[in-house]
Structure formats: structure tokens, C-alpha cells
Length: 178
Image (cartoon, rainbow, N blue to C red; front, side):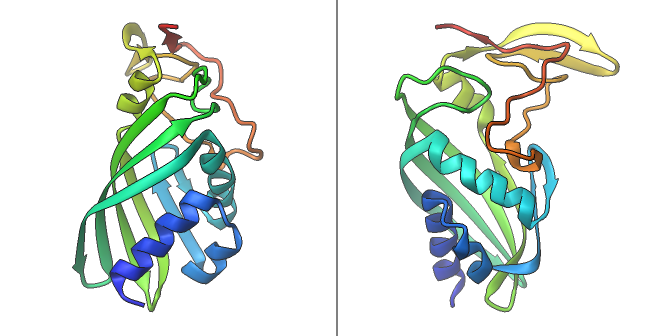
């Protein structure tokens, strides 16, 4: 499988949430790094169950694929419909545009590790979240943008035990403009 084919299959798995595909596309020791921290296969499966339900009707355009050794860097744009479950922001079937970069470390023809960075703040703003200054927490500066978030950390649910994850209540809060 070429790098472009692997990327296409990876994005298709993320679109459908088809868990069995992870066994075909990822190594047994797969690790994912992202805004919520680091997750193993089980943690990534939590995210894979959540994402296709929160953002439906997804169409992804792969803008760039760059290969270097065992790494494949992908820049993408995804357009979808928000159905709820992202940072407790209310769903009104809003169209959403997400951009991001994912780096895959490939072992043979399977993904061994990913590093993911997307425009979660911009997505939150598209959904009605607004930034207001929050209190300093320890050495971190807090933000308020729509839902409960601890000390400016925007965590995805992949390290949570179930798909009904909600960001913990903490010293910082998001506020919805709606």
C-alpha cells in the first residue's frame, strides 16, 4: 500500500468510525498523540467511536502528502455537519470547516504512531464559542470559550472511558454565544 493509499484509508476509517479497520491499518502497539494527550489503541477507539457521531457528513480534501523515511505528513481540510458532543457546545446542525496536520509513522504498510494538530479553537468559534479572558490557574492562563475546560487545555475524549465524555468542570469555562 502506498503512502497516499494508506492516508486515504486512514481518513475513511475516521469518517466511518469502522473499528475493525484499525486492526488492518494500525500496528498492535499503535500510539496516538493529540490535544488530549497520548492514547493507545483502546483510547484511540474511544475517539473513533465519538468523532463520526459528533461530526457527520464529512468530506475531507487531502491538500498535501509529504513522505520522509518512515513518516508521512498530511495537511487536510474537512467539511462536516456538527451534531453535538464537542466541548458541550450546542448542536444546531452547523456546517464546520476543520483544517489540520497529521503525521503518521509507518511500520511496513501500517500506522504505528500519529501526531495530530487541528484548529479546534476555530471549530469551537464556528460553533458559537467565544474567547474571554479567564483567571490564571497556577502558572497557566485560563481561557473561556464555550464549555468547561481546565486551564486552557482543549482535551479530546480519547483518554476517557466512555463516549459520553464531557470536559471536567474546572476553574475555566467556555461560554456559548447562543
